[in-house]
Image (cartoon, rainbow, N blue to C red; front, side, top):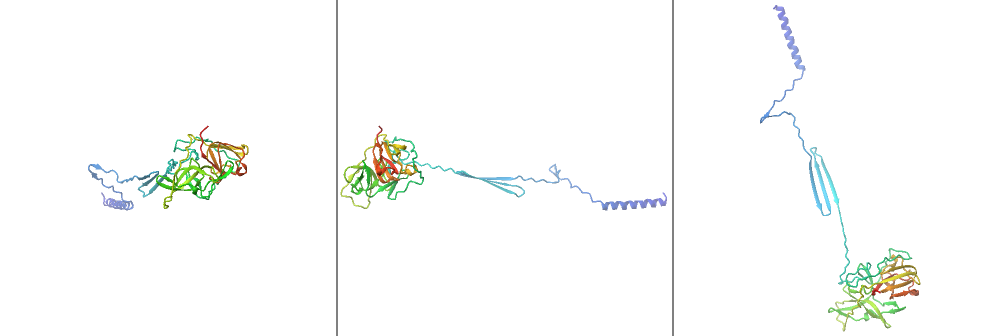
Length: 348
């Protein structure tokens, strides 16, 4: 090889090295793979690790009688917390009222509202029909309060107590009872009881002991001008009073007839004419039925009934026995605002 050709080859080699060096400087270095590691004969084939965290759910449940509260808490790896509170309140209230049948306080009479009396064998079998509305205006705000002394018996039944003169229309005339203070002190079970007033209830209610410790007795009471009629008398103890000079025994009332009944029909016009209504129940407030000051004639079919000029068995008092009363006269025509049965009668 000539000297000239050798020089050309040498120059060409130097140029090639220069070009190669320039290319190497311009191109980025290649990524070198990490060496493969071996763990117990297993080869790790993933250079990237994936981490998965499941959501954590916590339930807290608190149960009470009638109430249930559930707290549901969900926590994720993103740091998000969700609180879901479900509250269910179930309140069940049951009020069961049982009417007293214990005669230790006051006996429920057979004619009291529902005509139920389980205290004795003389359960009333009176007429059970609904008292039909009368010709007058119905006033739901009726049942005027009695301004004098009262006691409450049964289902908050208001009973006035007469402390002054007590009169009654009977047999077509006014009759005045002797003052209650003129009655004898009675001795019951070694204790003394003084007469304390007249009540406007009859035989079915006038028995037993009141919440104040007084005793009620349905008994014959004399009129000031002679004769007499049955009346409810209240006798009360006097803890600090000396024993009386004399005392009498409490006279028991006459027994009620078995299956005794009370029934009347009232009419809006005289001679048993006009609108009518039949009942065997007491009516303490006729303003609630449209019969206030609207009764002009009466047919008493059974029992003995007391009629009053005011509501709640107060005011003037008239007593009627079984019979037909076509004309109540100026004293009582359309002047009745309440009435009740005071003595039952044996069924015919």
